[in-house]
Image 1 (cartoon, rainbow, N blue to C red):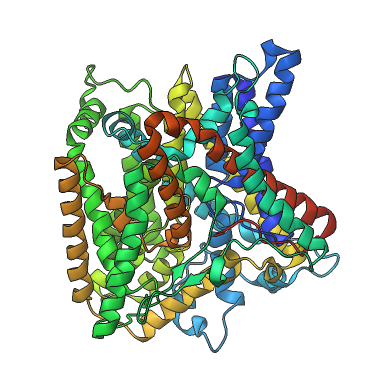
Image 2 (image 1 turned 90 degrees about the horizontal axis):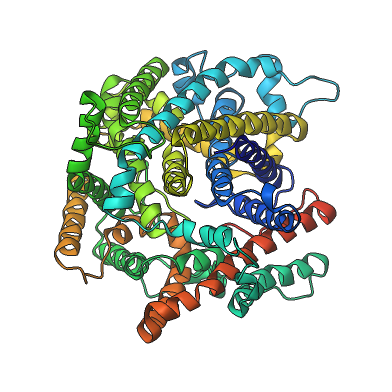
Length: 637
C-alpha cells in the first residue's frame, strides 16, 4: 500500500463529507448516505476511475493500481457513513437539544435535566444553543469552546465503538468470507468497474446492455430534472398508486416504490435471499392482518404499534435476529476457538497475517474497547444492570446487520428493535432510575451498527490489496478521524450560519427530541417486564432456528432466515424493487443459467452507474439554479 493511495483516500473522505453535508443541510436536496453504499461515494469513485484511466493513457507507469483504488474505496466506505443520517446528524442533535428545546409541555427540565452530566452536552451559555438552531446574529463569533469538552468525550466513545467493531470484523472475517463464503453483493459492481479494462479499453463501455441500463436509470432522473424548470412537463413517477397498495381490510398497505439503485445491486444477490425478503414481508403483513382481525395486540409500552412496527412482529423478528447470530457463532465455534488460541497462546498453526490486526490485538482491543464503553456509560448515569443486557444486545445487533448486508446486499436495513428497548422491556423500566433512562435516551442517538458494515466490506476488499494489511488498518482510522473532524466542524458551522432549524433534516432536528420525549414518557408511566414480548421473542428465535436447520439439511431449501428477520424494517420501502429484480433474475437463470446471468451483469451495472450520474447531475443543477430549494431524487425511492 503506497502513501499516495492513503492521500487520495483522505481527499475522497473530505469531499464526500462536504458533499453529503452541504446537499442535506444547505441545498435541501436528498440524503446521499441513506444506504449501505453511499451514492456520493460511488459517484466520486466513478470519477476517480475515469480520471485514472484517462491519466493511464498518457502516463501508464504513474496511474493508480487496482490495489490502490481499493484502498481508496475502503477509506471511503468508512468515511461516507459519518455525515448526517449516518452518525453526526443524530448525536450532534442529541448534544444540542436537551436545554434549548426544553419546554413546559415536554417536561424535559423536570424529568431529564438533573440526570444529565455537565461534561456530556454543551451548556446553553449566552444562548449558544439558541444561536445554533436559529443562526448567529451578524458579527457574533461561533462559540467553539463550549463544544470542546462534550465532543472530546463523545469522540472517545465513538473511537472505542469503532475499535470494538473493527475487532469483531477481524475475528469473524475468515469465518464469513472463507468458511461460510458470503458473497458481498454490494462489492461486485464496483469491483467489476475497477477491474474492467485494466489491460486495455474497458469492455463495459462497448456493451450495449450497459448503456441500456445507464439510459434507463439516468434517463429517468434526467427527464425529471426538466420538470424543475417547467412544472408542466410530467414527471416519471417511481411510486405507482401513490406508493401504496392495499390488499384487503386489516392488511397494512404494501409500499410500491421502485428504486433503480436497489434493482441494480439486487441483481448480484442470491435468488433465495431475494425471494425470502419479499416472501416473508408478505407473510408478516398477513400475520399482522390476522392479529388485527382477532384483536390481538400488545399494550403500547410507549413503543411500536404502527402499521409496520407492530410489537408482535418486532419481537418475533428480534428473537430471530438473536438466534441467527448465536447459531452462527456456534457454527463457527472451531474458527473462534482457533482465534482465541492464537490470541492467548500464540499458536503458530493459526494464520492471521492477512487481517487488519493480529488476532491477539483484535481480542485485547475488543476487551479494552468494551471496558471503556462500560465505564463511559456508567459515568453517563446508566446502571450496570442495564449495561449488562444492553451492550451484548447491541453487539449481537451489529454482527447480525453486518452479516445481512454481506450476504444479502441490502442497501436499506435496520434492526427490528433497538438494544435499548430490548433491555427496558426485559427488565421493566420501573426498575431503573431517572439517570439510567436518560443515559439510555442519549445512547440511542449513537449507533455503531454503521461501522461493522463498511468495515466488513472493507476487510473483504482488503483481500485484493497486497502487502502489509496492518498499514491499511491505520488508513481506515485516518478515514474515521477525518470524517468526524470535517463533518462535526461543518455541521456546527452550518448550524450557526444558517440555523439548524433550516436543515429540514430528520436526524438533527427530530430524532433526538423524539428520544427524549420517549424517555419522559417512560419515566411518567413506568412498566414492568413485558412477558408477552419475551414469549414472541422466543417464538421468533425458534422459528429462525428451524429455518437455519432446514437450510443446513436441505441445500435446495428456498427460505433464507435473513428475509424473516428484516422483512418489516426499513427494507420494506424496497420490497417491490426486490420483487422486480428477483423475477427478472429467476427467469434469466432458469432460461440461460449462469452464462445468461453473466451476460446481463452489464445491464445492472449500467443501472447503478446511471443512478449515480442522475443524482450527481441533479445536485449540480440544484447548486447552480435552485440553491436552498433542492429536489428529492435519492432516498427511499
